[in-house]
Length: 67
Ligand SMILES: [Zn+2]
Image (cartoon, rainbow, N blue to C red):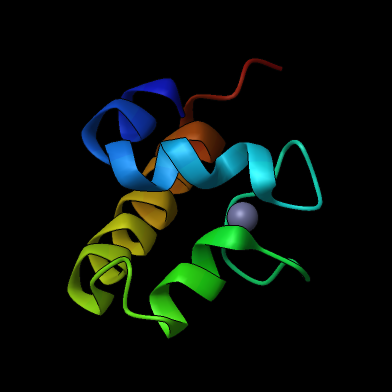
């Protein structure tokens, strides 16, 4: 997750303003990142690639999760 945040600086910077500390900025309520996308402070295309990265990294995590 840290690598993703490094690549998406503007999303990372907004994380502390989200309601939940572990917010993934996907479906959580009161998400500062989604608000910023709605307000066009973050481009929708950047947000889309962020979401793609999250789902990709989740697939990897499931695959390599230790028993
Ligand atoms: Zn969020």
